[in-house]
Length: 487
Image 1: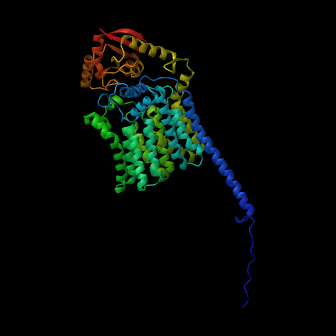
Image 2: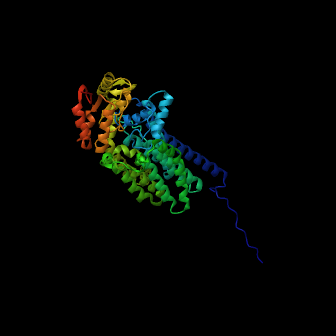
Image 3: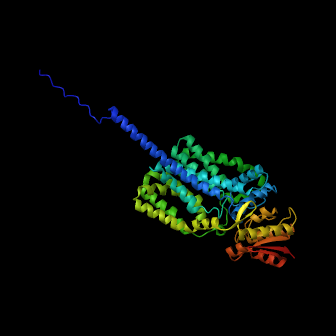
């Protein structure tokens, strides 16, 4: 037989086994790794710069309404040994209130800047979790940073309103729960997600419940769904059972299951509501199955926006949809991405400009803060007149709202309500409130004419309006505030 000739073995010059090519590939890999690391550092640096910019103006501005509300809630516990829900009304689960009390105790007194620092930490935790969730969806880490940048620059209103709000930590915990199920749906991750949802619920009840609902939808109708529910229930019972025992009447905890006056809390939709809706549509069309879990959880979180459909509350309802929107934008043609960003800036322009205006305005020092001169004059004089017209620990009343006055004047509120905007209390509760004012012999009342004008007709508060007009006379007019004394 004739032997079959073997073909000569030819070594390809560009074969991966060629030492020279391996060196070139390693070099290219190192360059890509270095470039990726540089972009990662830039992305994280941008987020850090946004947080640092807010920290730089931590002492600027004041909000007698919402900031005052959360400080006053903690002050009632810290100074006067009151119990939430039993002794005063509260719109939220008590996690943030007791964290503020802990800060006051560590500081040795009511600490306004401490509450702001906690809120700043909540902002950092929230945008950090947004980055963690966005990073696997995008190639360029700058797109992963975009949702946090939009949140901090377009939706956040500090220093106009610092909002030491439970939404920061509640939504951060909700995003931790979502992240847990991106790791898998094994028993340990389901339990971890349930615990994170319980953390969310401890700060803001609707966020915790809605994100737990998202977890159950993700699990489906099977026994695995019992794991996050059991973890959620066990963790919540650790603080809820002692609180219920202390309060005594479980009906006073009705707000925990959504018993609230929606008409009182309603805020009409603002144009910025279009941003998360556009993100939802873009994510559904562009990403499809690649972000199903984030879309589901994002829609559940977005439902917490109701009934306050304003820009402020988008900070806590829109984060997941912003993450999905950024991932979709990376996949769109650059012209469409640029147009979308321009629309976000246009919609958020009023919020952004008023923040800059406050930083640029002339300010004066008061209470360790830097306040606009008119605000400092009105608030400072009102607090001084309250202290002159009353003695230490004498109860006063602030109407319809400006709860920061209670805190700064160091005077207790003898009623259950720190906010009394029209609709916050029923006519029956208003009659009880008038009785409390008479029983405690309140002789000094601060009337916020600014908030009376902003909220319009008194509605159910009409009886209280009439009682104040018939029994009190103005002793000091301090711009936005009037100090009145009993006849």
